[in-house]
Length: 251
Length: 329
Image (cartoon, rainbow over all chains, first blue to last red; front, side):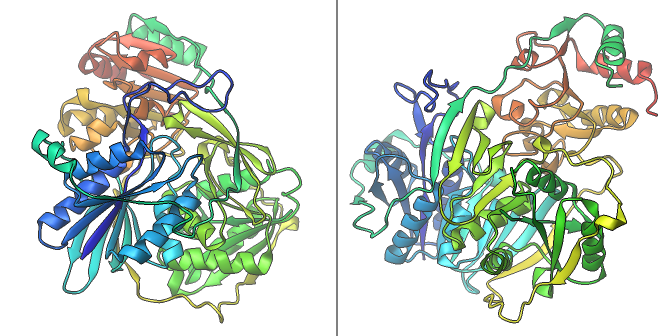
């Protein structure tokens, strides 16, 4: 069985982002970019399934400008067998990404498609669900545990939901999106980084895949959130209780 | 315009986040004129929930009930098809659900079936097609306009659209209840199965709706010490929250996590003990009315968002608070 993993290049999670003065977006020039942390978890899970002998190949897919190849190389250095880059400049909203993924799934025929539950830039949390819907595959979103039964062709997924953990069982092929606690992604070692340089990356354009990138969304503006007013530092518990009672009036 | 609210119910009543989705419909200019509420499930609790829905909000004009064992569990596959089917019949201009784990799971899938880009986690409504949503863990706000021809599909952040405290029970305002015809519902059965759900049972108020939240971080050191947080919460009638670090270290279960990828809370009072203030945590509580931070590191970023800060050892501060705070009313 083949596993396909979608990975996204985003502003590194440790970067303090700045909103552009003209309000068209956030500053991404000269800013450190990395693989979206949830995508790292998705890739790690695929690698572990392959290492346990339940899958034969892990294919990493990324979409976006030419630099997405750097993120794919990171994925290959972590252990993916090969990469696919769909070159697209300009905004790619989740619906377009889902349509491209559907085409790639039809070409590659994986038994499992694993994605991060959301990207930490747009925080959309949509692409996995949308791809599953377009493919008419079952979905296990926000996964904190994944158990594959190759014989029965079933995957059991523990999902992090609002009031606890929900367990679902899905027929393969299926889509899984990963939550934070699923695993701890590995670091790429230097020898593997060297090895990754010779792993193949196949290129497509949306046109070649017959996907029309149209958008039904328009960014009007991006602004900074309202700042909280500076607070006060108190010196004692008595003072705190007094403030909460008489100034804030919340207790 | 006309709006479809995809609602969740529990124990014969509409769940609080879905009531917030109803509040959001009232922010849509002239879309509030006709609001239909979709409920699905089976058994007596569904019908109890339907009658609750019919009188719970003055804006509801119709309650649609899909009664089938297929919807007993919140599986995305049949649910998305149901939303798709109801939309095809009703031609709504907007479809709204809460950004709960249910809404996040179902609505994008339904949107894909309708070939529509959904707008998720909406915190503000500017006009009928323009919405505000946080991006980059709330470090920026994005105003986005839906320009497509299909219905406008939203999930809303419940804390941004507070539900009215008391339900209106003006019987004169009761909406009609009708059954969704499921005879043509062709869901491919058996691709997904619901196995179980484990829930932490406790008496404390729900984290998402509590008036006060008492939260602990890694500095609590272990699950035993975390009981201090629980004791303080009990004294204040508060819900308990935690940072990702505290959850990952196993002090408390995951559903208590407050943050970008956990619960988003906006209580009147948020008290953070031993919380450093990582941006992912702040993203989950920055809209709280009053924030108190207690930390022994005076440089902890949590102090930058706190209204009242106390630099000190939480193992001394919490016992003192327990002793000096008044009993909850």
